Image (cartoon, rainbow, N blue to C red; front, side, top):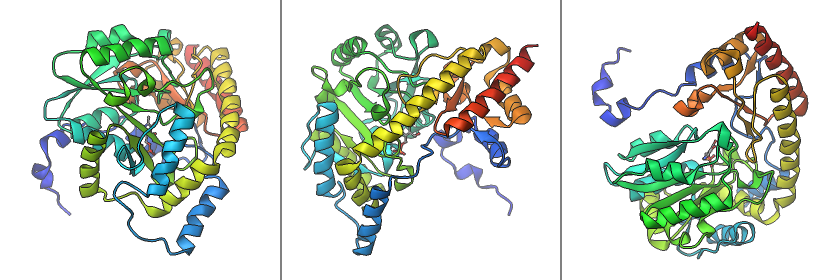
Length: 391
Ligand code: PLP
C-alpha cells in the first residue's frame, strides 16, 4: 500500500525522535542464541499465588469493568502497603487511583497538570519514556544531568541551576532506570525545600523501591511540606514480576487524583479487573516472594559489578533496581559502537547508554534480570570483547 498519510500526523509527534534502540533490538530479536542483558523486566514469572488469584477471579466470572478509580478493596490494600513500606497515608476513597501500569499513571499525571508550554525538570539518564511523555503532554522537558562521580544520584545544586521560569513539575525516579542511582535523604531534603520555594509539583516514580539493596529507601513525599505537592507513582511490574498484568497506581492530593481520574476515565476507563484481583493478592501475601527475588537480584548485582570492574569497565555500585551501568570509555568506542560490536562479535546484548539521554554517552545498561550462570557467561564474553578492542 502506498502511504502518503504523513501530513495527517501531529507536529509534536512527528518531531518525537525514534527510539535509539529500536533498530538495535530488531537485530537482537533475530539472534535467538544471543545472551540478552537488554531487557527491562524481571526474568521471574509472576509468583504462583498471584497468578492463581487472577485465575480464581476469572473462574468466578469477574469479567466486568470496575470503578474508574479501581476496586475499593485494592485501594485499601494499597494504602496499607504504602503506610507500612513508605510511611505515607492516603485516603482510599479519593487519594488513590489504580492505573494501567506506572506508564499510564505517569501519562495521565502529566496530561492532568500541564498546560502547553509548561516546563518539566527531570534527571537524566532516565527511563526512555520520560521526555516523550512530557512532549506528548505539550510541555517542554528540561534535563538535569547526573554523573557516575555522584553514582547517578541527583544534586540539589544541579536542580537549582536547571530551574527556569515556567518550570511547574519536577520528575524523580529513585532507584533510577537505567543507572540504579539513588539520592540520599539529606540531598532529597534540599531538593524538597527548593520544590517548596519554587512551588514545584513533584512526580515521583518509585517503581524500583522494593529493590533497594543498600540503606533505606526514602520517598520524597514523606519530607516536610511534600505530600501535598507530590504525586507518588508505584506499581507491580518490577518487584512482583507482574509486567504483563499492566497495573500500577498513583497517590496524591484529592484534587490532583480527581483531575487524573478525568483523563483516565475518558481514555482508559479502568485497569483490567483480573489484574486488580491479582494485585490485591500481591499486596496481601507477596512479601516473601518479593524477598526471594530480591535476594537473587542482590547476588547477581554483586557478581556483575565485580566482573565489570575486573574487566576495566568501571562500574559504580547500583544501590537499587536490576540494572548495572558500566562505563565503556576505556575501550575508546562510543556506546553504540561498543554495543553493536559486542552483539556481532560475542552475541551479548546490552543497551547503549545514549538510549537514556545524551548524558548516558560512554556507558551501557546491562540488566541483571537473568540467571547467575548466564551473567557469568555474558560478562566473560564482554571482558573478551573489551580486551580485543583495547589492543
Ligand atoms: N517507570 C520506570 C522507571 C520504568 O523503568 C518502567 C519500566 O521499565 C516503568 C515506569 C513502566 O512501568 P509499568 O510496567 O508499571 O508501566
